[in-house]
Amino acid sequence: MPISRLARAALILGSAATLTLSVAACGGTGTSAGDGKTVTVYSADGMADWYKPEFAEFTKQTGISVNYVEAGSGEVVNRIDKEQSNPQADLVVTLPPFIQKAAKQNLLQDGGVDTGAIAAGDKDPGGKYVTLAGNYLTFIANPSVHTDGLTWDDLLKPEYKGKLQYSTPGQAGDGTAVLVLLQQLYGKQGALDYLAKLQANNVGPSSSTGKLQTKVDKGELLVANGDIQMNLAEIKNNGAKFSLFSPATADGKRSTIALPYVMGMAKGAPHHDAAAKLMTFLLSADVQKTLGPDAMAVSARTDLKDAPAGTPSPASYLKDVTVVSPDWNKVLDDLDSDVTAYQKATGS
Image (cartoon, rainbow, N blue to C red; front, side, top):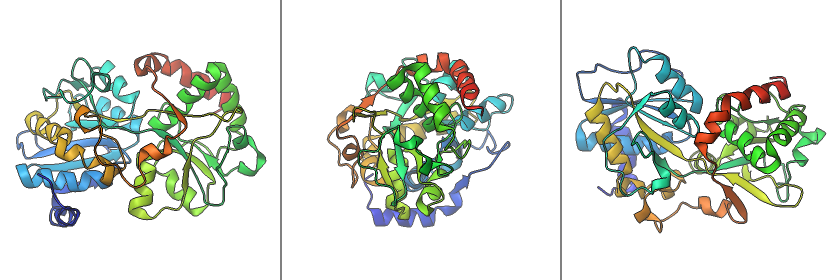
C-alpha cells in the first residue's frame, strides 16, 4: 500500500478521468445505482489536495472511481436532505455540528465498517459517522498584520473595517465554530454582544471558509477565520503567504475549537458496498499515516499517535492554546435558536 510522493503524483495524472471535482454541482451528481464502479463523495472544502492521490490509489486497487463534489460544510448536508427521494451521494464528509445534524435528521446509515482503531470519542456509537481527520479552528492574517498578541478586542479597531470577514455561523463549520468558541469564552450573550460590535468591520456573509483564503493572501482582507488543516495545506500546496493565529482574550489567553472532518455513509447510498470499501480504505493505517505530511491534519487512529506530522505540524499552532472540545450534540440542539439570535444581533 505505501506509495512514494512521486508515484502519487503520477497516479493523479494517470487517473484524472476518474476523479470529478465539481464545486458548484447541484442535483444529478451521482451515477447509476447499478454500476457499482463509482462512489460519489460530498465533502466540505479543504481536503481536495489530499483526496486526489488517495482516490487515485483507491481506484488503482479496486477499479472503483470516485466522483467528488465539494461545497460548504452545511451545504453538503442540505444537498443530501434535498435529494432524499433520489439519493446521489454515497459518502458525506463535513464538520461538526453538521455531521450530527445529518445523523439527527436520519440522513446517514451505519456504514458497517471496522472503526475499532478510532477512539470512542471520535465516532458515533451507532456507527453513523467517524472522524476522518483531526483539525482545529484558527484565523489567518495578511502578512501586513502583526499577529503576535493580537486580541479579539483588537479586531474591533477601525483599521479592520471592510477588511475582515468570517464564514457564516449555521452555514459553514468554521463559522459556526467561531460562534461556539466565543460562547465558551464570553457566554452566549457576551458572544452576541461581541459579534454585534464586530459587524461594523465584517465584509458580509460567506457560506464557504475556503474562499476567504485567496482574499487574505491578496490583501483584499486583512483577517479571516479558517482551520489549521485547510490553511496549512493552502500554504504548502499553493504558496499562500498568510499567517495563522488564535486571537487572545484580554488576559492574553488563546483558545480554539477542535473541528475534525467527519465521515458518514448517506442513507440510501446508491453504491453501498463500494462506499464501504472507500471508507475502510480512508480509515486504514497506511492512508491515515499520510494525513500529517500530505494533508497537515491529524489521524484519529489510536495506533497512530506518534505518526509523522507535517512541516509545520498542526501541533506547533496549538502551543499555549487551549483546545475546547464542545458537546456537539448540545451545540446542535441549540443551533437554530443561537443562529436566530446571532442574525438578530448582527442584523444579517
